[in-house]
Length: 299
Image (cartoon, rainbow, N blue to C red; front, side, top):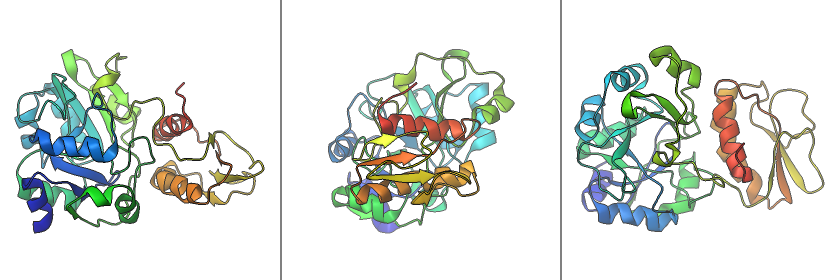
């Protein structure tokens, strides 16, 4: 733990576990440290980063919260929900991609929160993969992707959620879903009422058309594998899958397995990876968002 905090204070990078995916972390206030993340990941600098903080009090030091933001924070923090709100202070322009807003969340992983408490400031921690690749949900995958760029690393076990946080905008008195995640649309609306549509997607990470992608081509809504493909199943009665995201058809199990199994299949250098259909209700919205971007299209 002390080495992790020392790395952040020195302006170096840290492999940090969260409940969603492993992050490549740096001091959010240190633009030079943040620049190392963009360089390590090969990430476009117009793509903002999420600032992770210890608790809601720390969140309001860097962001301006209205009543809706506070209700969402109370309902879902610590946990896999990111709020995009007006920036108050403390997060570098580079981390915010030059925007007047900041994306902030309180992670639900105990080791991450311990680091944040000891460090005492906001920490950006985008997924610890090369830009565009599937996010790492195990320590080994994080180290394989970007471990060489980190001065320290923490093994927090396999990520329980397995897909990146839900991102919600609370700008201008409106609440909008910018990126689906394990906190579902219905759960958000139960707290703040109906969501409004937004044209502010650029304020959220994870919105590139091709993202989370294995090297092999991805084919969606498949029943069987074609020649040279590896089939990832979902639920009973789908062809003869090499692996199943969830044999029981449980979307939470599927989300936790998604990136790990895409990586696992990709290591075999198949002609393609076929993925069975996953219903779009609830958490399925987030799973299908990641799959469509991994396949290179959104729609």
